[in-house]
Image (cartoon, rainbow, N blue to C red; front, side):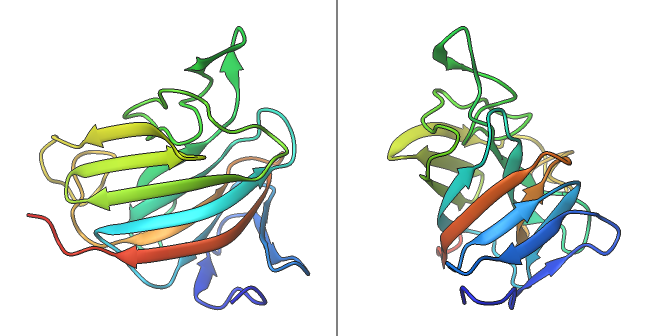
Length: 184
């Protein structure tokens, strides 16, 4: 609602700080922590804007999470670093990459500037756009498993914003999710 954390919950054992600014932005600070939706989603389109406050800031948007578990979902990374001046060589998966599954093809966002991220999860297919550029297009062909770290998770789960470590300071705004019809 841009004023409170209504519709979201934090994990009681984690230290991250989550607030709403006077401009209605969600601020994610410190670490390790997570802010997750009370509602679960399976197949969906999620669009949001985010801005990191410093270079090499690490955060992420998790989805199809096991509710109330610690960061147990697919992660669309937020990390705008790249190697040797080459945006096609992301550091730590790169913004929009599916962490530990597929690196971003290109780092299309810059630290300290708002960027738009669109995540589509439809059955086994996951795609991510950053500032209008498709950076990830991946199919999870692993055997089914409730835990997405071990295999394909089809079950609905929460969406979660990550405070990765003590240096994390990220703003989020204009978060919108639309459910899609189920795909076999």
